[in-house]
Image (tube, rainbow, N blue to C red; front, side, top):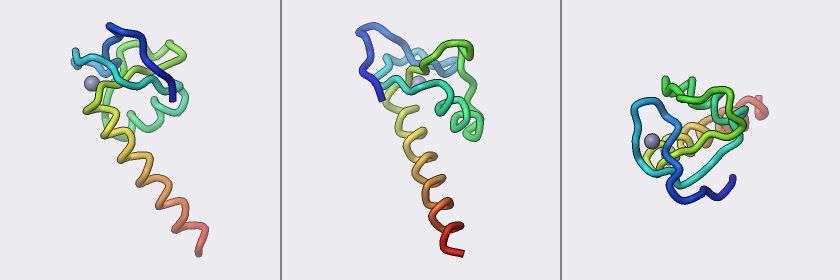
Length: 74
Ligand SMILES: [Zn+2]
């Protein structure tokens, strides 16, 4: 999880909010596609997220981890 330069905007298509977090695009694109969120620059190495979209991202990754844990118990 990286810090974000001032003035960087959220990478989600149609979102013009200021980014608060940057995430490596490999991980981010995987999660965001599950949320049906489209990223403007898919070729970039990092994805920038505003507070709202970062919250959605975090929620989605948390759910993933829970499912993983659940599967391992079986
Ligand atoms: Zn956003």
